Amino acid sequence: MPHSPNDGAEPKQDNSAGPDASGADLLAAAGYSQTTNTEFYSPIPDGYQKGRHRYLVVLGTVMSGLGKGIFSSSMAKLIKDKGLTVAPIKLEGYLNIDSGTLNPFRHGEVFVLDDGTECDMDLGTYERMLDQDLSKRNFMTAGQVYRDILERERHGGYLGRDVQMIPHVTGEVKRKLRELAMHGDGTKPADIVFVEVGGTVGDYENGFYIEALRELAFEEGPGTVCFVALTYIIEPQALGEQKSKAAQLGVRRVLETGIQPHILACRAQSRITPVVQQKLAMFSNVPLNRVFSMHDRSSIYSIPEDMRQEGLDREILSVLDLHGKVDMAHEDRAREIWTRFVRKLTAPRARHIRLGLTGKYAALRDAYASIEKCVEHCSTHLETNIEIQWIESTDITEDNAPSRLADLDAVIVPGGFGARGVEGKISCVRFCRENLVPYLGICLGFQVAVIEFARNVMGLASANSTEFEPGGPDVVISELPDQKRIEQLGGTMRLGGQDVAVKPGTLAHHLFGGRDLVRQRFRHRYEVEPDYIERIEQAGLMFSGRHPDHPIMQVLELPCTDPTGRGVEHPFFIAAQFHPELTGRPIRPQPLFMGLLAAAIQRKYPDAELPPRWLRQAEGVS
Ligand code: GLN
Image 1 (cartoon, protein in one colour):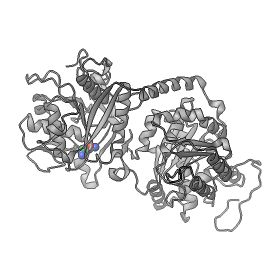
Image 2 (image 1 turned 45 degrees about the vertical axis):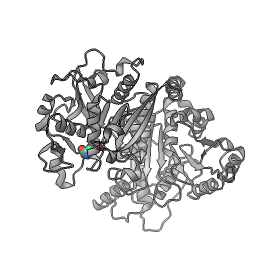
Image 3 (image 1 turned 135 degrees about the horizontal axis):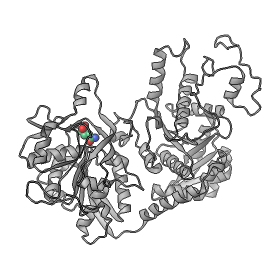
Image 4 (image 1 turned 45 degrees about the horizontal axis):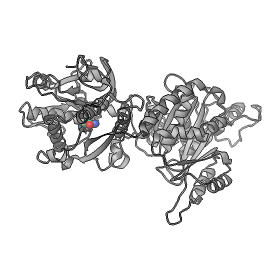
């Protein structure tokens, strides 16, 4: 008999599902379908196979900023290397629907996924570590959860019931997690979903996530969800010893939520002592061999191997009973490639170059996290130290540019919004173009390269972008036609992956490995004004990448052979309307960054032996 929420009857629990049955089995045995409006509303997606997927949950205690994302992505990589399919997700406690409106000063860079999702920069860490493209399924905010529930409520989706934190909000979280498990990496369902809960245990805003995960573990049954509590061991200078009390209290907070962690991962400055390890084990019910030291390392890329050596992956596979799924040959191959990269990353280097990064958030380096990562990958592959000099674009003027930028071997002008600092960026471009300093412009850095060229080469002295001077006489950068149409409706940007048709015979074509079509990620509202394209090209700036069907310019370069006959040979002057830094991966470094840095190395060390793949002198490049 269906159970009505108001009749006061207790659900019948006849245990016919067996002694080890999980909550869902008991509910099914008690006659509850997943869609009835019982107290135990827990929607299960169609086709979901219970027991098919496992979940690894990373919870933070004591303080934020412990590197939950780094822990979770490193572990996911180790597991993926073993031939299993992984799907990471970050659960954000804030009410924003996405990260699009967040200020980089407060939250670091806005990362953009191929499907256009604007998300936390941690998703960049996952993509780089796993070399796997993610989508909106891998990113959840409290705002999204509430929005979906409220929309369903407005459409009568709750059949007259009051909509509650439990079971509806927690149910929604579980549903999304299970959907992600089924989706997996897009090609295969996930063996393990890696769930990173934002914030720390005890925060108000992530409480419903933690409750949802507790329920998930109950419903999925023993051995399906592994909880890792990441904690912090304090080592006050004045005492000179490690203190574990804050960590103990933090883990106790986890226990209060009804969750027994299976693994403790202890962040610390130096390796945690056996005494600390014993105390934590004792007070958290976690066996000693599952309390791990996760002390500081010089590079995040060495963490997966360090975890492996400590045996963390083995313990997790034991908790989740997955040893039988490991493909050892796959693991050996993946490890060899990674180890080679890490060895090169940490090897001493004889060459040293200086790269200037001219942005308006230069004071906050997280705002350019992906650029920094791309540079790190390239410096490894090119075996050269690359020192980044952060330059506030507001400090640069036409007059001081030559002295301020004199000792740079290459310059990047990154993306940005708003007029502040733009004139400084234009001065930087001019300096690089005229002094043959290798230049890479990214998004806004592409647009200012066009403005600079129009002003100083084409003689359009007041050339500008409508973003900075609406209604100006020579708007060489203007709003995208689509944006012009939707602006009144709230407007948004051109976001996510798009195809770029690359012109054969150009430097861009050479760097992209001779491919005529590449996919890149965008986040912009303005573009080269189509009316000026022909004039700009006639004056000697080439658009080597375009949208395949529309007149949207996506890559520009100064060709080696200048069609105006002035014969200037710039070693490297390229800019992209897209964000190349979002798709650079450690093992597959980003081609435009490689080209820029190889050109800079060659300029400083003419005898350096560099892979021709990244150099302009290759045959067929005009
Ligand atoms: N502000 C420019 C635009 O909206 C550039 C954006 C960016 O650099 N991401 O088109």
